[in-house]
Length: 404
Image 1 (cartoon, rainbow, N blue to C red):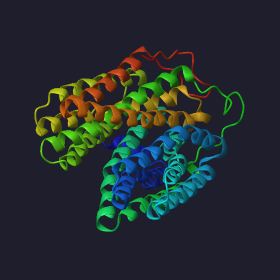
Image 2: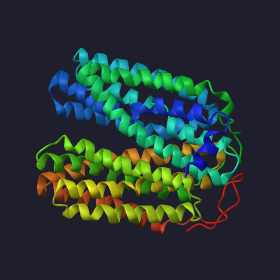
Image 3: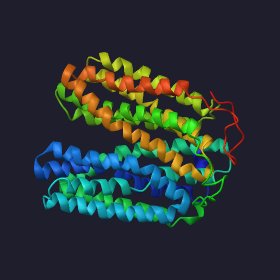
């Protein structure tokens, strides 16, 4: 099963840039939680903490496609290093604003700077895989591996920031994100041999159409996935608290992530014969189908089992989405294309969490699981009505396959 991973990781520079990407990506799962811990500890206000955290997440979602465009135009090293430096400045200003009790909205402005500047590491790493993998059939393995790395980020990051915040100081949790981002981005930027070339600004390069006929519905589907993720996190916490111990939410969500991690490993080891669009449709349907029984789950044990199985559908769905971007976006604009999908996911998290919270307040934690189920169904519907014309492939991509 591991042989496909051995093959891609033996490619020159693969282990090095993926490892650097892991370090640089850790702040994705740390900063929002670190902000909540720091602000609530210093001010006692969870409302203020939540609003500052939301400002950071929203800014990251809005600006990420633009940064992806800049990466494609000027190269990863220049843009990512500049972004990481600005991110560190924003984090430092945010810490000072909280410690010095600067008036609202100054802490929010600092959070916006941090979120907007966070380097587009995930999309840049995937663009590197697209550049160095000689056999297009190995790309799904590479993308599956990065999905596994993403799950590791969301398992390690929250534990690390919580440990630093509770055992050192709340300030340390937030400050560590700047250090990790700078170190990881620097390690990635110095690896020039695997960096994709800068695209030409013509009709076959940066000037080529981005492929919105496919990308627009894909971003819409990504918003649905984000809402499913955000809603599930909030409802799981509420369910655990209602069952007697809010701390149970931690291991419940860890099971969810573990299911996705295992599925990512398996996905990358297989030869995938279905088209990315067909796999996206199947993944969205399976994810929704497994989430649906949570609405009737009577105990923590049932929630644990169902979340574990639901997690098994996450990585295959995300891998299919990224593979679809890779097939339908010009190579010179791949970083920007992937950034649009990740921005869609990030955009969906906030409304998913907010609507989930409203349903919990109105009807209880179990009923709250309706929100991620509806979000999953929305994703499945969008994926089902998507159409990818066989002839509408940018120049320079692999030969077309039958889609859908």
